[in-house]
Each structure stands twice: as structure tokens, then as C-alpha cells.
Amino acid sequence: QVPLKESGGGSVQAGESLRLSCVPSGRTYQRYCMGWFRQAPGKEREGVAVIDKAGDTSYSSSVQGRFTVSKDNAKNTLYLQMNSLKPEDTAMYFCADRGPNWCDSTWSDSSTYVYWGQGTQVTVSS
Image 1 (cartoon, one colour):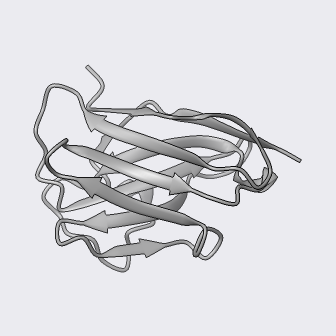
Image 2 (tube, rainbow, N blue to C red):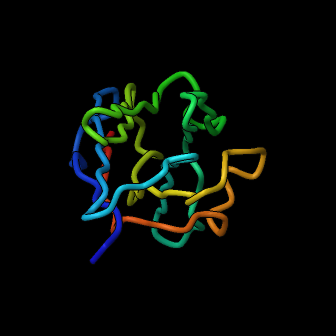
């Protein structure tokens, strides 16, 4: 069973918005550090945004000011609101859980995350 499940991807025009969601599958996670990553064909997986248990967030410079990561503890759901989408945002988007570890300056290192979803595709056309 895949630990996390993403949804909300799709195909949009440049300038439009999408909201991605991520829920755990059959487990409850401590959520000390939850992140969103993306991977475009032929490129390495890139850290996009992260939120810790206290609600503190960090973003990559490529999405700062356009994307917002948030969580709803009552619904046990992680979100990524993506505004002003650009063609270069086209990628498979993944959510990830760092297990019992808090976020830190290495948050964008995908190897530090324990649980992953299968991803949801976002395609932005110009």
C-alpha cells in the first residue's frame, strides 16, 4: 500500500491555478515535516515546498510567491496551492513525509524523506 496519495493534478494554461492534495493511506503520520517535490522528465527530483508540525514553511526560489503549502490537521490533508503557473512548472508532483524528523536546512534533499506518494501530473501549456 502506498503510504501517501496525491490528487489535484491536471492540464492548465499558463497563469492559471491548481491545488494539490495529499492524504495518508491507512496510516497516521506524525507530520513533523511534510514536503512537496516535483520531477520533470530527464531532471532530478526538486524540493518545492515544505511545512513542519508548527506550520512553518519554506519554498524553493522558483516557486516563492506563487505556491503556498498548507495543512488541515482535522482532515489529515496536506495542500499545495499553485498560482500563476508557468510551463516550467510542468512535472510530476509528489508529497513526502520525513517521518520523525523535523524540517531543517536540508528539507529539499529528497533522500531525507521516508514516505512518498506515487505522484500527480501537472502540465502547464503556454
